Length: 84
Image (cartoon, rainbow, N blue to C red; front, side, top):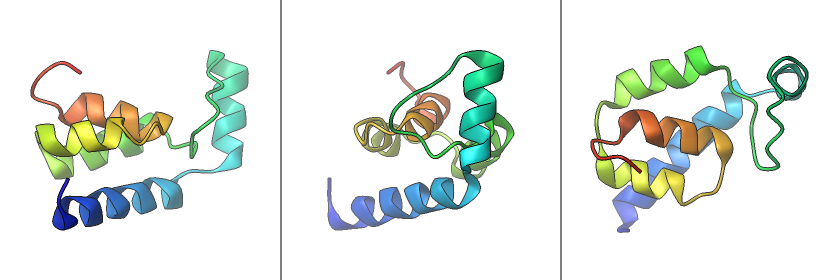
């Protein structure tokens, strides 16, 4: 990953962090049984909006998936051209 890609990954992670909340993490845990350890707690509608803004981008999808963050991995699955 080059410097520019690292900056983009950091920007996306920061956006996800800003959109997330502990309340959403608890809601997902209670309502859906989803309790990942590394998550920001971002609503699906917000992840979808980010994915739409980014468009398809395999390199970014792979980089986001490799962060190990649950929300970033969901986003990666939406922007990937290939199946991850």
